[in-house]
Length: 311
Image (cartoon, rainbow, N blue to C red; front, side, top):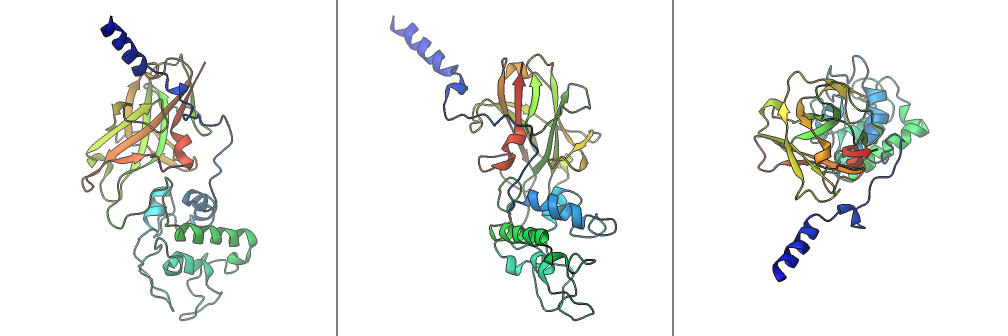
């Protein structure tokens, strides 16, 4: 009499619906575009580096800093050594986390106008508009850059930068029907019908030193709990040199997605309506631990890694 009762209780706990937990909150239902905080790197990238700096013949990959995409912008700024010095300043890094006063990026945006070798204003950016900083909107952008640097120059997931080799980072997630190269539309999270067939996950992964094909571990996890992936199902990801081109995480730039998780049946995760939360894990040859994207410290971009299963 005791044994069956004990097993029944254990089974009930094992299959408890995670949505009965009042602490598990789904993301708000919204079709609004991303509206990142003004002191975040993604805000600065979209409002300053893309529109003002990523111009033909300028920071479009012709020379550093390289503002063609999020990863190149962040990695060629934060702890990036200064190559070309400017008069009246000796700066070690373009962006020194926590120290805007020691970051060449901030200096070059706030110099007084000037011209000619040896003058204080030489090296002012944007180079073709020495009055840029006096526009009220642009002055607010500079304030955002200063706040971002002084707060530690964190990446888009809220991770503090590391001097030296960085862990792999995921700068794009898209989902297609299995075998297709047409991504599901997304405002923030991705909506997929519960009657949909198997799907492929595509990821755009970047590492500062290790080529993507040489990453030593790669997989994703799917969970019904936003903050708990300890018992989540894991699916291996493999490198695909011929992956399709989709928008990156800014939904602005077209990039080639280089990792694939094929033929996932979402009904095995959640057969009814609700939310599935995604995290990606990658490891390079230099770091001893896996990167986790997003993580519990990632606030703004958590909703980007969510599937909403609909009727």
